[in-house]
Amino acid sequence: MTMHDNPPPEAGLAVAPDLTIPWRELTFTAARSGGPGGQHVNKVATAVTLIFDLAHCQSLPPEAKATLLDRLAPRLTQDGVLRLTARSSRSQAANKAEVLARFMTILRAALTPRTPRRKTRISLGAKVRRRADKRHQAGTKAGRRRPESEDE
Image 1 (spheres, helix red, strand yellow):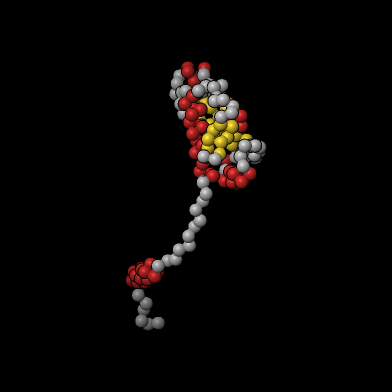
Image 2 (tube, rainbow, N blue to C red):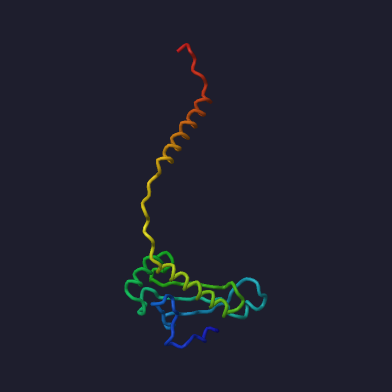
């Protein structure tokens, strides 16, 4: 798939069973990529950048959008845009497939509900062992001290 061979506009990128992002909301740009490849990299734009304007996305439900904005905040620009780049392959199609796979992985991870932490208690045995270790360590260090003189 080249930069201009997107699937039909009515289709979209299925991120989750109930969530599809239309292709019109994803922007792909190509640029020349560095790395191995000789003259090939100087002539062909193989690096692919995916741009997704999360802040102004119309297709996401409000709760999913709020979750994504919160959890992806470190990855977003100040305008709420997610920008991903792939340049590991010499092929533009492979880089586009890679950037799409990363995009879907990031969105799925951010939309996965977090499991609440269960409060646990330290067992009685662990407390007893910790105190015994402390007493043992204190005894070892006490044995290293210079003996007190009996004159005082």
